[in-house]
Length: 316
Image (tube, rainbow, N blue to C red; front, side, top):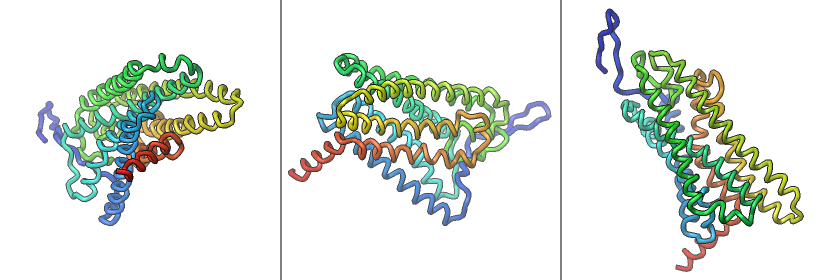
């Protein structure tokens, strides 16, 4: 930290932050370490398995599974942005993260999380086209279109990430360097800024609100049409297959949107840090762990692909 004179006021500008994490003694920290490690390992193994299965099985080379593979990649990345540093801090007396490291963590976390929200909307649109216009589906969702849609998700996530990170770290951090969280996120960082954070809170609430509302509208319209189409079908087997596939996606969307809304898109969310920590564990580790299970256990194609890969491995 370095002192700066400002008239008669002496201000200390911090060059590093201290991530306070969770309260509790050594035993509590050890239990939290074990919990975080278990969640992270399952998330890594589950998402790597999904990526491998979809890549290796030619029967899963379709737009839906292309998007699902990207979802697993995002889950893998944004849990990895948070978990390793949190695990180190549980076992360390020094919970320091540099200014640059904190900004980097916030940037990539925001990028991955926002991109995932956009991707879930794209996946809903994909199912809408597949069920509503099955004959035109191969043309409408050709590989180049799918690639552009995924690229658009990343570009949207990058734009939000640049805005949130630049606005947050343009603030002076001189009142305290103790961040009441286990990773660098916008709400706890705003709490330790000594400047006026009204614009930052408005930006956080506004952008997250627009993203959540936009994604929710796309999902609701898509699945509203899909439900109407399913109810008109005469084949019970066809209805069950579509419900199984779409039910997995709706579960993933509901869980992510619900937790992000609680954390970012409601007035006063910035103030509830203790609640924020618990919610953050859910969407940084639990959701990345659950998504592969949701999509594999409820998806017959994925289970069949896993079985074929297992049999091929045994045969070799």
